[in-house]
Image (cartoon, rainbow, N blue to C red; front, side, top):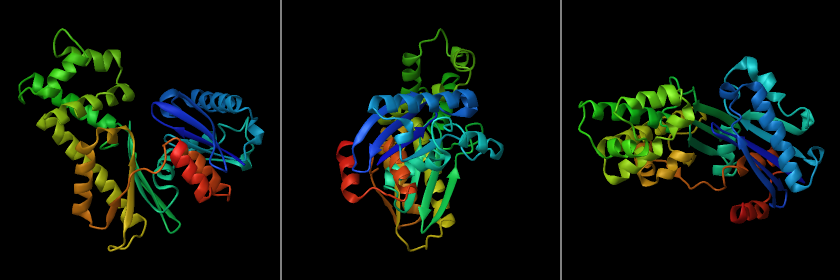
Length: 322
């Protein structure tokens, strides 16, 4: 059997085609399918062209795919758009052989292998999703204008605020100030406004790209940058703890927690703070490393939706080679 997973994101869309024996037939990456940013027509083109391309690479036809799961950014957040999003792949796939949902499901499926628990995503945006005894719930993910706490975009915004304070003397200049000036040489500090507002036009991905610079500064000892990551960890832990209640976990029940997204590539600066904040909220959280590559989550979930979940041997093969 053949399963297709489509994992949408704020900056790119990943396609992966696998078999029920755990073989990866093909992979493909393309532009973002975040329709609120690029529009519904562009999102449809990304999905259609991506399915055609990955089928070409694998030497199969779309109708040969047994089941497909498409995790799409912002799915379900605007009720009036759900029907259009559900229709995105309809010119290639039969409606009874695919399902669309939010991309948070892909992250959960990859991190926890479709097993009960909670996954926290901190990429361009942030969101938490979990399942427990058949109950599903989400927390966060309200968008970058007034939410997405703890995300790369949020960290980027906080870091730009930090730069402005350092630049005009409200805070002492530190490592982050110098790193940002080195990365984006400008005639004077205020030209950062030209960069963000005029050249970038407030693009969420560009602002999120400042997070790795803040991470570098934090690791190097910039206390104000470290404080941003500590606050990010607190915000992310609050999402997880909120889901504990929504998913009807008992106070003394062990909860598996995993994570995904680029912010966690910052390593101990965020992970240790995240573990510390979770432990303050409840002592029964168990943080585990993500089990599978993020792009595999959608394909693994597609097999589950088809009522033919991958067996242990197939999942092990994906762990080793996926």
